[in-house]
Length: 174
Image (cartoon, rainbow, N blue to C red; front, side, top):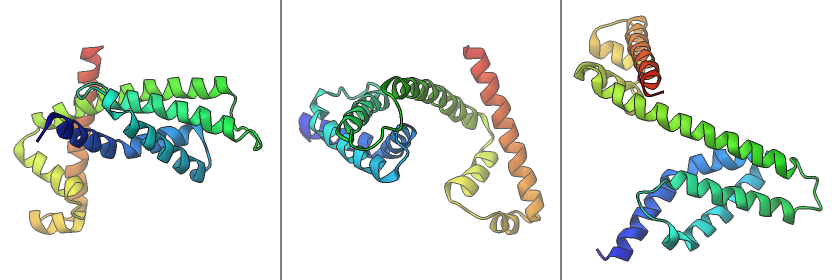
């Protein structure tokens, strides 16, 4: 695969992986779902046109959200005939808050991934069955010879251990 093709392939993968994040980010700035979808499409077009300017390995989400914010601003300017939901300063404040939240969620996700690796193999399998494969509690109860309440209790203990581990990990890093 040529370098340009490899960049395009990685870029498409990043763009695909971040669609939900972009939608949520834009939706935090615009309330109307149709407007959000329109701005998301415009954002995707700009991201694709500017893909050669993106350096693989850098923070795609931050770059894409900056493009999305600019597209929201342009959208609002084009829609002057409609009442503006937020003033420019409000949009900027919301965008800053979203960036802070995004960074916080990234740190929590990294901590969670680290904590999951610290679990025993059995507990990782249980988590994967329930949350990765989507097995029902009833199916798991049959497999493990437990009642559904027993499975809920087992999952609750794992989640509690993960919660404590994530909080401890974040407090150590702070």
